[in-house]
Structures are given as structure tokens and as C-alpha cells.
Length: 393
Ligand code: FAD
Ligand code: UDP
Image (cartoon, rainbow, N blue to C red; front, side):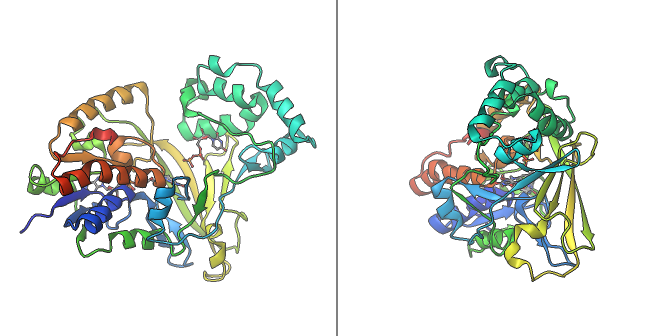
């Protein structure tokens, strides 16, 4: 059996971007190993069989980017709809439009403030703590938006999402909490936004559709590693701690239990995402997938809709790792794994699992394009040594 030029472990956006670039630009033969029964990593979606509604199997995925290079690249494989993401939040029996904006402030305080008046109100309410003095998530949030809004919209939701009291969470988790003093309620503020017209899986399949790319499904790299390790370059996008047999300890993750159901109504909640901000509601949010594609409204079965309740919890070893917890202990372990990764010959680590970083799709794709430019092209096209970028490539 002849060896490929490159082995890519994992067929998510990172792995497929690497495979596509190496096959198309450098004419390399690329073998992609994927342990799941489908390609695409966590962005994979499929039609719910009874209704025909596209469901994102590993949680709702909304594409957005301000990176022009990434935008140009992704448009080679799919067109995008003009969907603009909006999120609503339910608190004590009322529904508010997020992120925090003039509409939410006026509804919450029962007022009709102008932008200047609302700004003054929030400045006064947040003056209790100076942002630079905040030592935990709660103090940081109060210093940015004030206690009443924090207690309604952040405290309960964050407590459920992290199962930790916000006074025990790092202030770094909230780097910014945008408050808009207008009625603008788009969730993202990027230049480009939309959903792939034919769905995520069609997009991901087009990336892999090249005669030089072979995707081998239901194949765990560790079962076949001896055939390739040390013989061909490997781009590994699985969990970095798993690669090294957890020698430095397990990195901690949060997972989400996604409970999907088909409801016998035309429309369950009138929008794609409703957050449940009360602490005593056990789930964090409900997703209703049909609203991500209003342009497909008449193509699915009438009288039925698909919803998903999301419950967040600490990931056990067999759970899907979704959000890096990133405690001080995790960061220490990660530094040790980075040293091991740098010393690992002929293996590059990338993607969200390989770097233990929460990467949005555009970031995973952008980071793979950089690995191609900075490391793989120089190696294969110009004979440069395969410099291991470590897990931070
Ligand atoms: P992944 O997609 O995780 O792919 C890694 C692949 O490697 C997997 O298919 C896995 O099976 C495979 N693998 C691992 N180990 C092995 C092994 N030993 N052998 C073979 N195969 C292996 N991004 C956005 O931009 N917008 C969003 O709205 C958004 N929502 C998200 C919601 C949730 C709940 C989560 C968890 C993520 C979300 N993301 C979103 C992020 C998005 O999922 C990532 O950017 C994307 O998955 C990164 O791709 P990746 O290739 O790095 O990793
Ligand atoms: N958050 C919150 N209330 C909300 C929405 C978000 O407190 O209504 C906080 C919470 O700490 C959460 C973080 O903001 O963990 C990021 O939320 P987002 O919905 O942006 O992230 P996602 O879960 O979609 O990755």
C-alpha cells in the first residue's frame, strides 16, 4: 500500500481546509482519517427525517466573519443566505431582545429612555465597582452593566452554563459585554454573516471533493497510527491530551446535552434561539432550527417543527468536548502539552481540540490557512524543514 503525502486526523473545518489546500495547491495526496461515521466535525448537519428540517447535530452553528480572506475562501464552496442572527432571552415571564440594547433596557426598567438617558443610567448602575478592580466574573459584569441587568440576564444563565457561582469564575470569561444604546439587535457585528444555502454538510463535502483527497470514515487514528507516524507528515486535529495518552493529565471541557424533539406545531417559538435566563429553568436555551432558513419555509412538513433543549454540564471522558474550561490547572497542563507537541517529529497540531481553544468556524479556517502558508507550503514546495508549530500553530 502506497503512503499518502500527508495524513490529516479529523475532518472538521480545520482538517478539511488543510486537506483542500494541500490537494489543490500542491497536488499532494491527502488521507483524512475521521473516527465518526460522517465528515465535517462539529459543524456537521443533517435533515431530521420526518420533517426534512436541517438540524446541526452538535449545536447551532452560525457563520460570521470579518476576515476577508476567509470570506473569499469559504465562498468557493458555498453561497450564503442573508440570515442575520438574533437571540431573545426569557426572564421572569417576559421575552427580551438580546444583546443588551435600548429596547431591552427600556422594557426591563419600564421606561422610554433616549440613548443618552440610558447611557447615563447604566453608567450610574455600574459605578459600584471599577472594571480594573474586578476580581471575578460577577464583579466584572457589574462593573460593565450594573447589578440589575447582571442579576437578570447574566447571573442565572452563566451559573447554568458553567455550573459554578459567577463569583468563582474568572473575570476573563467576560472580555466584553456589549451594551448598545440603539435598538439594533443583530447578535454578531461582523462584516459578513449568513448560513450555507445548501446546508453545512454540502459545504463540507465540497471541500473534500478532490481526486487527491481520500476521507476514511470510522477510522480512529490511534488504531492505525503505526502505519503513518514518523513516515509521513501528520496534521492532528484531535484532542492534544489524548494524543499524548493524557500523560500530563486530562484537560477539562464542558459538554452540552442536546435534547431534540419534533413538536406538533407549525412554529414553537417564532425565532431560532431563545435563552432561558432564570436560574431555576434547568436548560440554558431552546433552538428551533426552521428559523435559520426562512427561505426554505415551505419545503418542510407543515404542522411540525424541530426544537432542541440545551443542558450544559462538565464533560466526562466519553462525552463530546465542547467548551474548554481553562482553569489555572488546565493552563499549566496545556503548557506541558505544548512542549511535547513541539518536540513531536512530523506532527502539527491544530484546530479547537488540538489547541484546546474555543475557535469559531472562521477562526478554525483562518488558522488552517495560516498553517498552510507558514508551514506546509514552505515544507512541501520549497523543502523547508517541517517546523512544528506546536499546539499554538
Ligand atoms: P472539529 O469540528 O471538532 O473536528 C475535529 C474532528 O476530529 C472531529 O470530527 C473528530 O471526530 C475528529 N477526531 C478527533 N480525534 C480523532 C482521532 N483520534 N481519529 C480520527 N478522527 C478524530 N462556530 C461558529 O463560528 N459559529 C457558531 O455558531 C458555533 N457554534 C458552536 C456551538 C457549539 C456547541 C460548539 C461546540 C462549537 C460551535 N462553534 C461555532 C465552533 C465550531 O464548531 C468550530 O469552529 C469547528 O468545529 C472547528 O473545527 P475543527 O476542525 O477544529 O474541530
Ligand atoms: N451569557 C449570559 N446570558 C446570556 C447569553 C450569554 O450570561 O443570555 C454569557 C454566559 O456566561 C455564556 C457567555 O455569555 O457562557 C457566552 O455566551 P454565547 O451565547 O455567546 O456563547 P455560546 O454558548 O453560543 O458559545
